[in-house]
Image 1 (tube, rainbow over the protein chains, first blue to last red):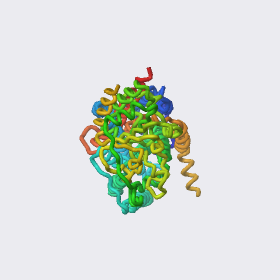
Image 2 (image 1 turned 120 degrees about the vertical axis):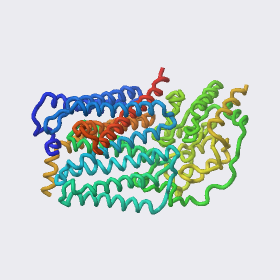
Image 3 (image 1 turned 90 degrees about the horizontal axis):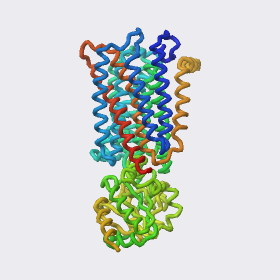
Image 4 (image 1 turned 30 degrees about the vertical axis):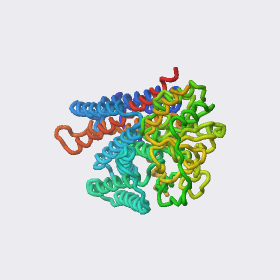
Length: 481
Length: 104
């Protein structure tokens, strides 16, 4: 560790060693360039390919050229074992990636994130016996790799379960105290392991304890967070996996791992902050799970009735409008209604109606979730309008159609300072001339609060599964002359 | 206080890499349009599978002459990391492919 972390100073020159380091440099550059290209729509696909190429390069050269501290290369028997493991992982990963529905993308990403975290935790755990506990840097890297990796693993698995609807949200006030205690125990135990003066072998009991508590912490950390905060958590867990990989990079003195991991860590953190800003909440606030939690003193809630509209009236209203804005939400995703929705917007466009989509930054269960779904349904970019741009002329819009969205159009965010979502920027659907809301039932949104928009005199409701409703509506529009 | 300096001096190169990479990561990501948030996250997630190099080194130098818990866990680490890498890149490509096709 000493010689590796201090980089190459103490290592003899070999051609293989030089080639290996050179390939790591190239891989690291490909990661950076790839990520850069990924952040522009025109070049994104190329960027993804570059990053993948960098990873492939680093894997191949490691397999062929890596030597341990005694200068031994990887023996052939081990090469076969590794290739088999790589083969199994590749086939599994590839098949899963191709078979997953676009609507289930958030849970897929969570799952992959969990596997990355698990790999980091396993590597740290297996390297622990070789760690010199007296060496602060070495001990810190191994312990942090284990802790962060396990938290990312169990947290992402729970996020996967939640997004897949297998696990519900649990909100309790005591949860945050439990989390604080667990976090303190983790820090305390790590500190003890580093200062106790015992060797790694003598501390293996503490290692397993640390592993266990970290896994539990990952679960209790994600448990109280739910609903609209899911995009933030996924992004946060993503950056944790990057940090875990960096720590493993320290263990091996591997610059490609350090750089790749930190890059993901920083990018994930920035994305997390962007998400939080989009909801006007602090990260701490999200982590404590205040959303829809004990602080939900929203008051009596709106009064009045929800007024329904029948299909033919809705079809007439839409067909004779000049401008229509569609606000998609998670309901559209679960019903897989993106294709029918695009059908409807094309029918309306044929009748001379100007149709746009208003995309709230946190609509859905993942940052940019709606963009992906609508892209799948071939809705052109130019029709997707971001929140701030749509809000400037929403008052001139004839009809806003809200499909399975709730909290992102709740005027309580503006009107009611006591509301749990107060201050969150919303799409100002309530300012439009007419509003049609498609909803599964009369229930509340994920934030667990009533939406006064649904009781607005200008609002009409269409109850039912978004896909069925849109299908019926589209055929009504088609039959109008 | 001296210990802090010793720590910094010992790990100066790693600290350099970290400090610069953090800025690089922030710089590379800022101004990304929200259209790309999901693919970007998924792509970054695949890059974090770089831990696979650690897995290869670990199993590569393990004693493979007999089956041990360490060996099995190491193999498991490689499988997990590969899932992360391959699945991550393939899923990202699938998403981006959809963005692409209606640009004609």
